[in-house]
Length: 146
Length: 125
Image (tube, rainbow over all chains, first blue to last red; front, side, top):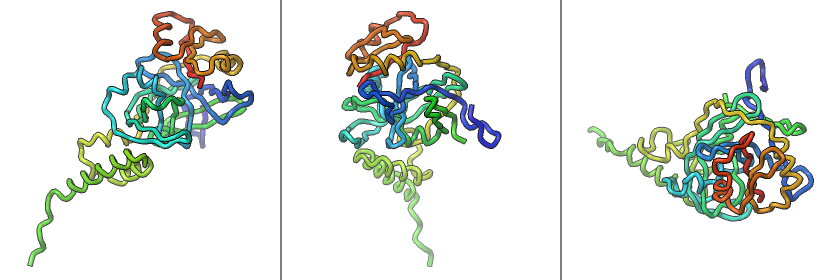
């Protein structure tokens, strides 16, 4: 994996998807592979360093039975509108093709109103990880922050 | 002349006040501000406040889970995804194994079926 000043910088690597079927060219969207305990399938989640919080797509939240859990009422403004929901703590795995995957437990915004993608946001998740992109090769490097 | 004794509950009151302030900020959508106030509050928040859990840093540990090369699945999304706009799809290699309007139905369709690799699920929105 990546090494900085002789020390390990990241521990895992995975391919990412930067295409959207509606557009022929590559987009600025970066989808990485994740797994949610209990669903045991691979899902794609979008990296969004501009997002205040990570957000979970409503149907995925429903399958994980998150709407029945306690959480703090919160509201999030996005470019497509404002959504009411709750902040809940959930586990997920950032899955590596090579090297070591990471089990994470972070705070996500969940709302029955949110039918957009699942986002891995900056605050409370990415801000504690080391991440790097090899864009020409569509490779996403990640590791635990120092 | 001695100064007036400081009430013992000062810090407790302050903690409750900050907790209420953070809750209000979250409810108003001011998440950055709520997080900043939480970070600055130190030990003032009540020990049993659930905000401590919600706003604390993520827990991270290494995992043995490993995935395979998903180039075939990504190729399918790039080339065929447009025909399934709005659908949930389950892909194994270049094969679409199931599709549905809902994740619940998709997972039910997949059931206990066995595949040579774990299906990749994506919502084509």
